[in-house]
Amino acid sequence: MPDPVSRRGFLRSAAAMTLGTVVPATAPAQEAGAVLPIRKGVLLDMLPQNLTYRERFKLARDVGFEAIQAPTTPDPHQAEAIQRAASEAGITIDSVMNMAHWEYPLSSPDPAVVEKSIEGMKTSLHNAKLWGAKAVLLVPAVVNEQTGYRAAWTRSQQQIRRLLPLAEELQVIIAIEEVWNKFLLSPLEFATYVDEFNSPWLKAWFDIGNVVLYGYPQDWIRTLGQRIVELHVKDFRRQGYAWVNLGEGDVNWPEVRRALREIGYQGTATVELEGGGEAYLRDVSRRVDRLLLGKA
Image (cartoon, rainbow, N blue to C red; front, side, top):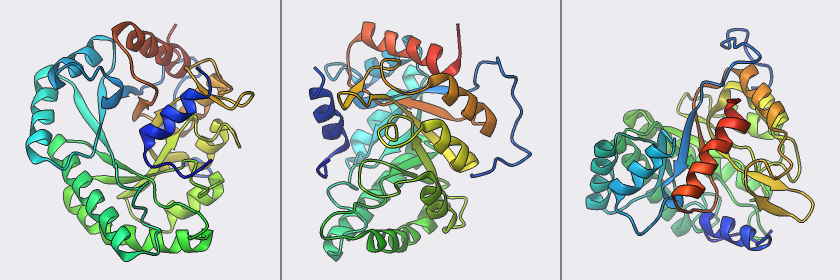
């Protein structure tokens, strides 16, 4: 897949085609038939853009979501408006979607590009502190003809280590995600990459749908184990190479639930799909209940 210029562009282009390791013994035990204790989140960008922030957040809460993932917001006045609106609507901003890492990857050989990426992450971390979010999503590197795999690994780790002191100061986790960037192509590599930082402020963000093309989400979940701090929820159909609505693709949802139960995951699962109105969002919320949380 060609290197995308933005994450939302990645989802839009895909939609157009169709329209750790061993879990520690101390992991919390959960009964096999129990509903998973996971909060439901939704992207701010999935909510109707013609509404005010407060109206969007209230809609998200009304259809059953408990948390929001908001994008990097450089304008401090807009960031404060988002915070006020979330507070007034009674919903949590749980995480931040860093918006600089595709266009300005940390793995770039160009120092000017890297510095733009660093500044984008700093803004994202400060947004997270303002909003009370626990994590910032980061795509760590992009492998392409200019940047080989080894260079992507070493350069990105070097730059992330520059960000860890700020993450610790602000008490915000940097959460690395696997995407279609030709990097971290197996759960074993992903686990090793995270472990090499040896920091509580660097964890894994796992996307259930992203690995379906070349792997099995339940396998990645069991391998990454308690390294996982956040989840993205979407579905993918191998035949036809298409992003689809939850439950309409090749994700084995019972096995995903079982794997999450085994590792004791109790964080947020944020839906990452195309946006829509109230009826659509309510349906998505119910699909999460049924497929991921195990509610009747």
